[in-house]
Image (cartoon, rainbow, N blue to C red; front, side, top):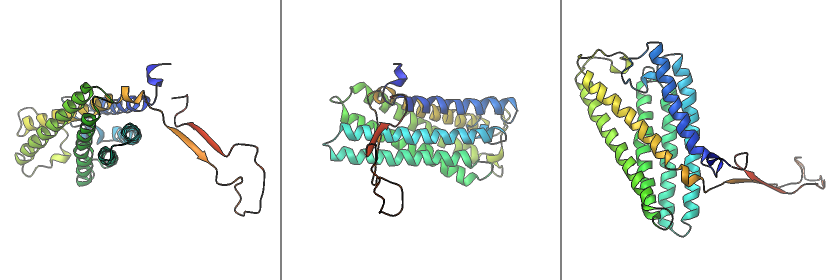
Length: 271
């Protein structure tokens, strides 16, 4: 059995690889078609103009779905490992809500381009990165309470450092964006896809874009910490029949030749 076939670690692996591929594909396509500048454009700018915005939206929606599945498995795992801790159960549930909210924000970012409806795109970005950062913080706190009996202290420190990296990127991006917008009064920055070195607002723009890519990288890096944990969990779906037939009326009394319940893994291949 390969390492990615152990437990459900295929979920965080798929999430990381697919999301990374989304960013790289959109960037290469946008640069080749000269829709953006090669030097560190905004991630959203690489998915603004057709045809890359069409594929970018679809791929990012898939990433959001993988995120929802990954966060749910993490929730069930922590729930099983902390059976007697009601405080951790509440914190774990909070993490699930924050994570799913962040994934919903990713769908908004994917389907509302900033040049089409900037206000909705901004809401999606806040939900994705802002609420997502809170999700990382909650998971770091959970890791603090779960060590050393459930996992090593190093896991907590890695997740805490990634959380600090995330918040530092958010602060840097926010400050540089405020400076950039304030230095360009009357300019429609949302529709500005090309920048000339030395022009007003160029330096804050570069700092802002680097911060955004750093922020995205911190999110991807965080889910890498789930791989070893997910190798130790498997979820199964059980079908419980309430009737021996599928007719609307109840006078049928067909004797079934099969079991009334069926259990199988959520993912095929014995994962």
